[in-house]
Picture 1 (cartoon, helix red, strand yellow):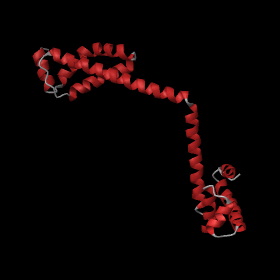
Picture 2 (spheres, rainbow, N blue to C red):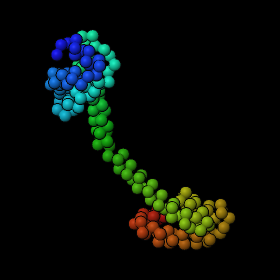
Picture 3 (cartoon, rainbow, N blue to C red):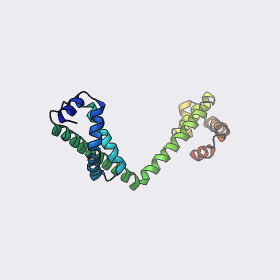
Picture 4 (cartoon, rainbow, N blue to C red):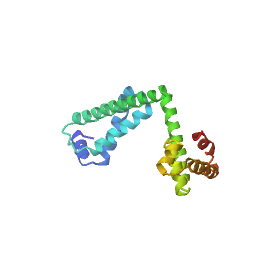
Length: 186
């Protein structure tokens, strides 16, 4: 194919021109990509991305050298971006692997929040007085503080709390978190 014909067909986004370029430059571009990435599959993907970029390109190339420069420059940029992104991914993975405490704390926090969500839902089924006692208890208030805040006797608070715990344990036993709930009130 003549250079001028090729450049004209590329500017017209003609399939024959792209097939010709792919056939003639794919192997060389892949070799360059493989030099950077050291991975055949990634190299193939990056070269494919370069040809897609060429399809999307609005530039009208005046010489075949301009076209070649575009292909190799686009490939180099894609390889460097890939390596930069890979470096960030590797650094993040290394950080996660080197700090298992954070991962353990994360799952501990998720479990704790799940238990509290189930408990809160179950508390909503209690009578209004029992619900208030249990919510204040979960907030860490002492029994005397709850009695004072709700203007009820300490014995009434103890009775509401005891009755509520029994009802909640029955409700939550079905969810296999009753032991965790008991642990919260030790």
